[in-house]
Amino acid sequence: MGAALLLFGLFFTACKSSSPLAYLQAPPQAKMQIDGQSEDWPEGLQRLREKINIQYAAKEDEEFLYLYIRIDEASYQHYVLANGAQIWIDSLGKDKKSLGLNYPLPLATSRLEELAQKAGADEAKFLALYAQELQEFELLNFVSKDIRVSNLASKDFKTAAHFDAGKRLCLEFQLPKNRLGLAPKQKTPFSLGFFVRAAKASPFEQAEQAGSLFDEQDPQNGVTSSNPMLGGRSQQMNRNNSLSISPKSNLPKIWTRLSPKE
Image (tube, rainbow, N blue to C red; front, side, top):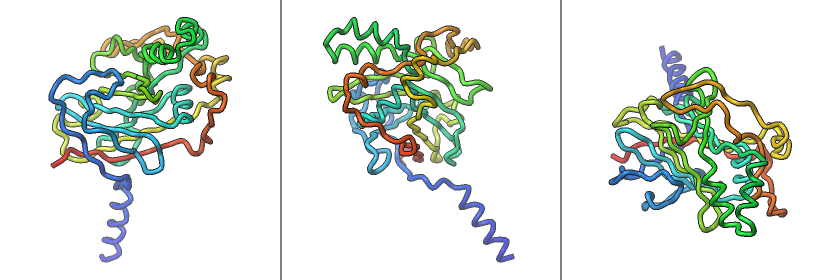
């Protein structure tokens, strides 16, 4: 009997998440503006993990979960702009890749060249134009295929990118709780995963390969059937020849559990 209880205890411990517990900020008092800027986050940001220079904040109302992520380190920005970052939500709090998003999606090299020509020598203008272009994302595990979604047509999922005054990449998300298995008033912790993705090929090779298109239609989320935002590399990265690249094995794959404050 004692051995059986011990085995049950070990199994229960193994099923529980080992990720740290953090708390959601106070619910929004006004409608959130999903624009990648920090005005809706007056309580500030905290690090996802010690020694990893990525800041975040999260809050919720009964309908949506809101996330704000600022990527301070240039080498992480390189990978995110080249291949996206993954946001994962596990409503059971067990750090499993249940449902997620991949954002931002890389722009085609030809489009980057057009933006660079339009901005001229004004780097701030180029970054602003770049962020405005990042209007698409992928839904992960919601159906059998990853689905490419237009921000402009989606009724519930919203994403935004912004480069702040320090040229740091800021990402903001509005995620519908009912689509993620989260209760309107979630009382138990749930898991948030943030993965900086490494490209299967280098950003330079991606520019030549320019991945596949998604033809599937989803009337609720505005899936596009043809979109040029595929492959490519960041002109911003090209302008900085001294940019260091993090080894792929060192790219952040971070889980934390979130819970409302009692």
